[in-house]
Amino acid sequence: MDGTFVRAAGDIAREAGQFLKHFSDHHKLNVEHKGSNYDFVTNADRESQRLVAERLKASFPDHGFVGEEDNLSDAQVGEILKRDAYCWVCDPLDGTVNYIHHLGLYAVSVGLVRAGKAVAGAIYLPEWDELYTAEQGGGAFCNGKPIHPSDCNDLRYAFLTADISASNPQLKQANLERILRVAMASGGLRIEGSACVCIAQTACGRQDAYWNRGLHAWDVAAGVVLLEEAGCAVSTVYSEPFDFGMKGGFLCAAPGLKGAFREVIGDQ
Ligand code: 2AM
Ligand code: CA
Image (cartoon, rainbow, N blue to C red; front, side):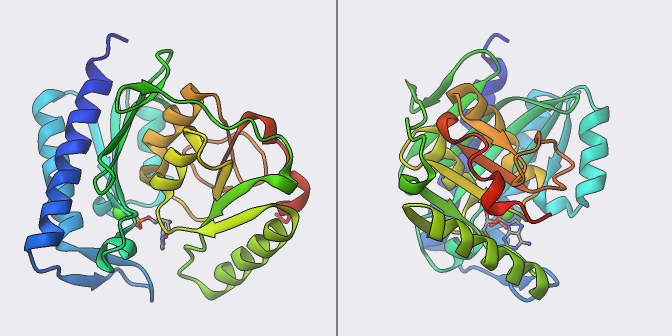
């Protein structure tokens, strides 16, 4: 890879992120329920996706594109990603609830998947002006500087984040029970409400791990290549190999914590 894809991902994620920051300061947010009680979409999510899709289609007309606001199922996205030679997978606003409440923890994620494998991507955090970038074989960076995970290798001292993110009450209960078990077995735990922010923080070693049982491909497409290039462990929450079908959720961790969650979360 010659850097073309990761540069485009970074430029577009930054442009969309700066649009979101400006929009939040100067425009009225229209908030709609997406069907379940606590799943929202706003005009900012839609405008951000329009911008990202337009830019990508102009630069890479032969590539596929999937964004969160296309409302495809996990199974449909899984099939597209296995099939398409190159497909961009984008979350135009990750952390929508935080954004609605003017909490700074939100991000734009632009990832490129080739035949089921994440190969390039960028995550931009507008409120911190941090751009995380990676492409296969080229390392992982924050604002151009190499990043590395923490050296934590003992769950008892690990500083973690997780998410509840379940629209269905049974899943929510199961997630909270998992979180309780992990919280009791670990050092510190936070629930921050943006998968991309937590993934970026794990990749650069500010925290030791993150997991979420209920994510979608667009939440993690850029994150997977960023984490792999930084040297993190990436798996389902049950420590099985990760794939974009998203059946077992998502877990990323400093390499010394690989497999450390198996016993604590193991409740399939
Ligand atoms: P989103 O803001 O793009 O929806 C915490 O809510 C994290 O889980 C966020 O990154 C959020 O992404 C993600 N998430 C994915 N699916 C979700 C859902 N159905 N409800 C709430 N959050 C969800
Ligand atoms: Ca989103």
